[in-house]
Length: 328
Image 1 (spheres, rainbow, N blue to C red):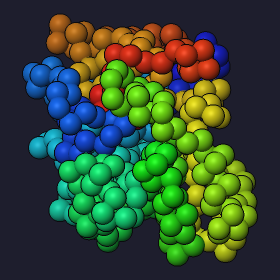
Image 2 (cartoon, one colour):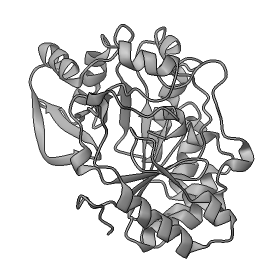
Image 3 (cartoon, rainbow, N blue to C red):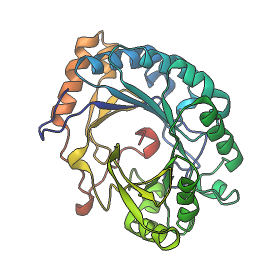
Image 4 (cartoon, rainbow, N blue to C red):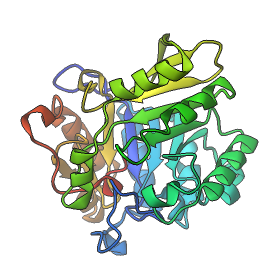
């Protein structure tokens, strides 16, 4: 398993398979004129499979497919199948907004997918289209139901909290864990990219300490779940609940010291840290004739050069890419 300069074990690769999305969440993607990679610049399924084989060969074991919205890829089942069948892959998951999940959940499971994270910021059917734009709660709920039926569990719901939009919905979402063995994870806004989205992140930020306090006021004490950590999420449980309430707090409680991940962008760059601009180009090596060995060398270099963490407290954040181009 590769280690970086700070002795962190890096064994988790998040693969953005597209920067396109069928939603336009206010904090992620503008309604007009998002900068998208031209289709020929996006990695093919075969190129993604090559990167996965190289990653496994140096000790990566865990993989997540993200977007944009990964289910927009016409070949997403081929991508899942190739990753799942690679010797050495121990875990493969996918993050989706759920809009297309109702018809793809079972084929994804049959292709080898283990579980899904579904992004849904509110359970208010009227509010959701304003915040996530273009989607509907009914579509997302059908996707979640299909994922449950297909056995893609435990279901994890990702909730980005935006002041004045859905910060009053967090109790209703957390209450789901009293009824279901789901993970409901609250995510702090991150100031990524230029323009409107970064402005929303700065001006409508809500800390997870505030979210946690609100949940406890209305639903009772949250108890930490010993030894249960899900990626970057710090996990808690309401009394008697089968499910888990998680908090992902990159701004107020950075988890950089335990970061174990590398990101591959849809246009073929290893992005070394979500909140930094550092990248290494792997696509150029692949399309220049480099094979698995070349990819392996670039990946190991990326691990060695991975920054110690972000510098949001110094006013420094990524400026070149929005969240839809990074895969979260």
